[in-house]
Image (tube, rainbow, N blue to C red; front, top):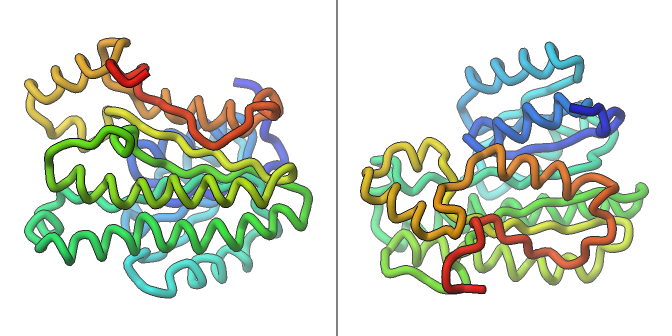
Length: 254
């Protein structure tokens, strides 16, 4: 891999998740210095830091609980002490609704927690980081949404994610009106991605996920990461708008 991001600093929230880890690895292989955010998975974060250093890049870890109301301010205070500038910001943090504790919560509590972690904090961070980028020469900000926002699905989990990821998509479209040309906003609408969550599903559900795509497979963290790197590069500078669908061209929706 070429060192096309040498001299760039990348902030990745949710860096210890399946998608976040792959983005960390690929950016460090491409020469970028990486700022890793995790909530409490410090062991995985330390492993990632070791990989980053072996790849010849610099890396630093930051801990922050996005369920706290002042999480955005807390995280940026930590980062400001360690990094002069952020060139690429990847909002990869997300609440896992399938953990036993969260799955047992009533709907109202789930949606409140989901909006805090997946909507409020990313919006607050992106407003602040985006303004700094615009004032200091530019950058790229990424959001992750869900392709199901546009068609829906009959489960409580889909209702929750549809509400949260729909809010993120709507915010990103308006943010993209004020920050260019210095700052590019990218929103990836993900289909079925084979992360740890996907590995826990039944064989039948895995089959249905594959059939949902014209590529007849689930997407991978590598698919997501390589798209992020391309959309951060100068080669994508004339790609306008925020919506990129990473779902193997979902059947019946194009």
